[in-house]
Length: 403
Image 1 (cartoon, rainbow, N blue to C red):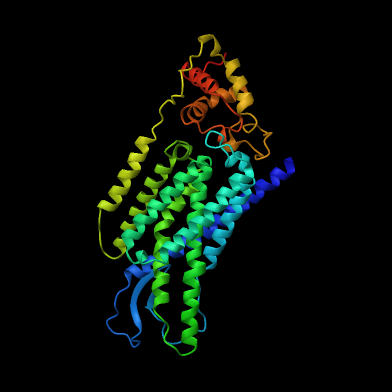
Image 2: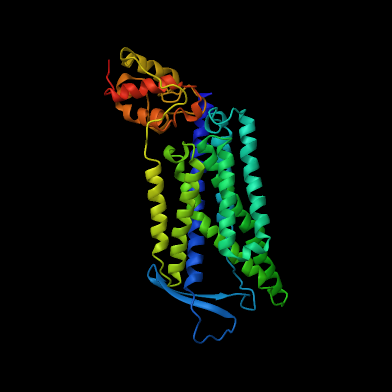
């Protein structure tokens, strides 16, 4: 089992690396082409009347001259570069990582008995259904006239996303709910590339090759979906890193936190897209920053008040021996040099709690994650009790004595 878990760790690391590399390539090309479109200028004189716009730029010690043809130059270049594999490999590696980490370790990373008691396969089924259902809803919305109104489409889309985030948060653990929302958005984004953008471009190329005038609708639809992807990028990037910050996903209002941060990211992205066109609207990033500040204030750690009568811990029970017993029973299965839980080969975040000195060293982290944020144990897989959390809190507030 140790070898199997070790190999799984390597698989996760390599797939995560590929995901990061291809994601950078996809996001980079998305940002660049939106920037390029927004900086195009009508050429004063051009021998080709099909030229829609052009731009001169300098980079890497040379000058570049880009021109855009809405319906092609009237002929097919011998070498035509496509931008699609970045998207495909980002999605495939992301799905691989989702399967290797969350689906394979569903009992640890997806099921939270405090949210809903599920079998691992049920949690995986819910997650997979969310990906497919989210894409079908988005695609259906894109096929209505509403897509022509950018603001209305964005508002309704955000409302539906909020409903999905709330629903998943009632079934899965917060961390899993977040990552599945991110995977769902990523599926919609790659669906735009695979089902709309690339097929449209292929139809335009085929029409030109046959000496026909390509239908401009394919280019317009492709641009529309590319813009959708551009605005969804910052929210997806936040979700990719959110698993490192339990404060964002461990509370009852995690779905609202996610939506506020999503809106903040889209406002900031909108600021830069307008800025590329020479339109400066400072209120956009300021509003985004204000939303993030509001979330930070809202998430400020406050002691958890358990339901029912307050738990009173007798002073004589606040001893290190009692604390160490709780840590051994509830934490060491993961936080050990050689974890006994199959999901881990090494201690998460490098935090080991087998020795008394390590428990003292990480006392603040234990208090924050297990007592204040209640994010640990992950999904409460070791069934820590309210009384045990209260005792850990009393021990820390007493100065974390070592005796």
